[in-house]
Image 1 (cartoon, rainbow, N blue to C red):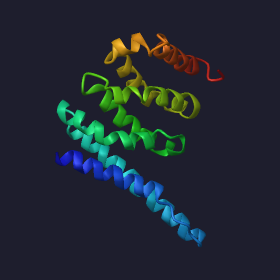
Image 2: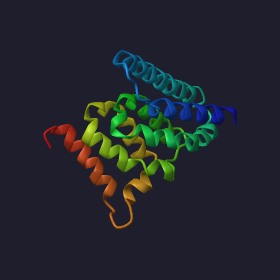
Image 3: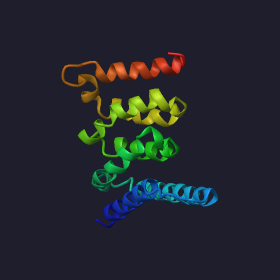
Image 4: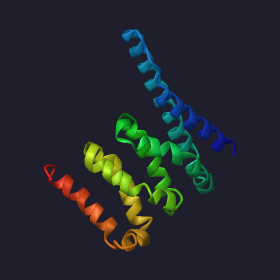
Length: 170
């Protein structure tokens, strides 16, 4: 669909802008380029979030867009992209809620989001909360059954999150 194509182009543009740092000789020029890169990356992500908000009523479109957005989400979940975390979490929130099911691909991000939260983004608890809530409520069976060999994996992970919130020194 047109929206999937548009999102794919925005994702590609984001990755090119964000990764495409070139060697600069002049420090002022480097600062200007860095500002432009950050502005372009933020604009791409804002467009994706706006697009998701516009099509949120269409479960089928959201499911279709998920596959296109997975590579972008993989980039955004890296600790060095913390500046773009709000947008990434907005995308995850839609992808974990609208389809009324959490896909296998989105489940693969659970440990990444858990680690990101505990080690780099505890200040973003309010933004993470709807996502973890969706994993628990929308993906209840998977959440309760855990992963092979670790039946309590997801429950333990949520316990770790709650422990961190209740005792930031932990």
